[in-house]
Length: 313
Image 1 (spheres, rainbow, N blue to C red):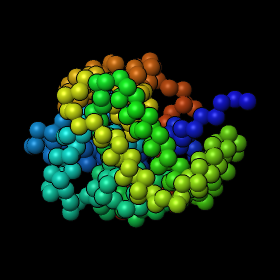
Image 2 (cartoon, one colour):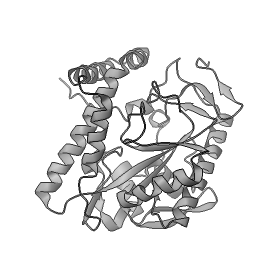
Image 3 (tube, helix red, strand yellow):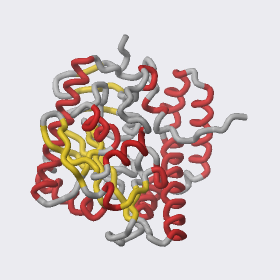
Image 4 (cartoon, rainbow, N blue to C red):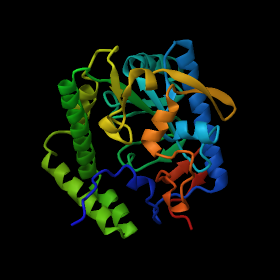
């Protein structure tokens, strides 16, 4: 029997069914402009308050390989050390609370992600995380760079807890959203994916006696367990490769270097080559068309006066 891969992060970036919104070139470019405007506001708060941030994931890859968005990319990812993140959220809310919804694991109900999102009011960009969320504006994802322990044993315990609680949060959310998720998996015709969905829903059922918010709060607190802001190592447990796949020396990822991104200088991880190689391997090689990653969006898709129907041909 082949090994069942339980991570669904990559799978959700390749699902395309009749219930998904497919962006045409004009819509994609407009979404990218909206996301860049959100990034402008985020960076302005960071620069005014000496808050560290770096482009993360595909955004860092786009900065290096394309000097801006990857042509088909539809989101922006940022990484931020925990101590900077704790200052950023109140500072951003004070300046831009009227313009954006600010979703965080500890404060936002019916959101239920261990990462944070800055979402533009007056827009609608619905993803598979938004079945219970009415504040589904265009968003920038914010991943926290967590301190982790210098002691190898404590670091191992920290990593096990981060990955374990992250998986349980995912399973609990799968159970809550089981009907639309199984419909989505069924439309793909992918039996392996359907099996993974059923497995996570079953585990979610077993822990459903504990509210999803409790799992979320426990996961966020555990991620932030190490309070040593001078530790040798840090990790991004909510990132695409989770705790051990995204563990770095502090100086490699917490500090930034200027890179041109869509005509403006933005911060990327200081050791950008290490960062991108760990995430993507040969990161300068363009992917095959079938390997291109895109988010799954649902109707209503609206960037202010422009709406895409749920069913497009």
